[in-house]
Length: 403
Ligand SMILES: NC(=O)c1ccc[n+]([C@@H]2O[C@H](COP(=O)([O-])OP(=O)(O)OC[C@H]3O[C@@H](n4cnc5c(N)ncnc54)[C@H](O)[C@@H]3O)[C@@H](O)[C@H]2O)c1
Image (cartoon, rainbow, N blue to C red):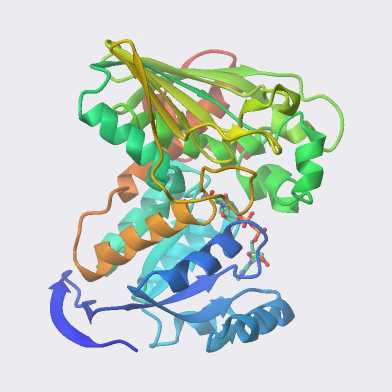
């Protein structure tokens, strides 16, 4: 139930929230990867009522609504948008639908939470921001890496001057690659979904995996350097290889400069073999003038069957200190580094607070645009075979219709 309250957020066109809780609908609810995380997280957040599920798969969404005790099941998004009992939509649909769905929701007066990648072009992304602003609704991109507990611990250490000025941010990622055993364990969840390797549906052209994951890398890169803008990127394209995992391998290293040119960063894809025991999954080293932080992200830590490593380790002053935000284990990965469902839940809670309490979002729509720009620049760099400045990504440029 919603309860009455003061008007806390008052945009110009009269779409006002006056409630303690937001009535939210999950769209793409029968999906395999993001949807389960959102379905698990939303009921744990006391600022939401999960009032409806929507998916084009009518049977699946009906069954899911019964199973989860959600009152309404829609197979038509248009009908859902006409429902006055819904305040906000949570879009966990594939990227090619994000812009159209977000803009339609905003025009229907619904607040919008949309999974990354925000859109497939800067034009689409900026149209989303404009539509939300014109309708006076909140728009937030679900960039869960920015809300991941260990990442936040590392960011707080950096902000508390634990390592001095940041000099370089180095990322390595992750067990989805070159690792059929891990793919088998996850039941092919993720990679083998058709839109994920389709040039236009993913938005990534010949580099769909980078389109899907690039926003995470750049959001993380900025998180660990005071959210500074990235100025230019250089990608190393890689022969695609053979087999069903080929689409994952288009770009295997990326380097970037932050604005101002004094700090740089890099991302490398090659995975530590599970037999190595440790240091699998997403991890970042933040090298500062006086120390280094090692932090594990999604699926990061030890390989299945090996003792877990600490989510965060600070190396400074000749000592080694470990930190654990205490968010528990992960549901998808064999890791003590909770990502599914906690990072998603943390992000969704922030969204609820931005709508209900008028709080500034921790990850603003402009952040979504910035990380999409860096991702598109990365793909453009791989295509053009040279470094690309983010300022040189045209508004209407897409990776799947690239010259
Ligand atoms: N933040 C993260 O860590 C994270 C993790 C996984 C996925 N994602 C993002 O979430 C999004 C979804 O990814 P996924 O792997 O869960 O996708 P998925 O293919 O498993 O699920 C998408 C769902 O959307 C449904 N759908 C398609 N068209 C629809 C329509 N018109 N109306 C209603 N439902 C419709 C499909 O039937 C499907 O059930 C992508 O943008 C992806 O990048 C983010």
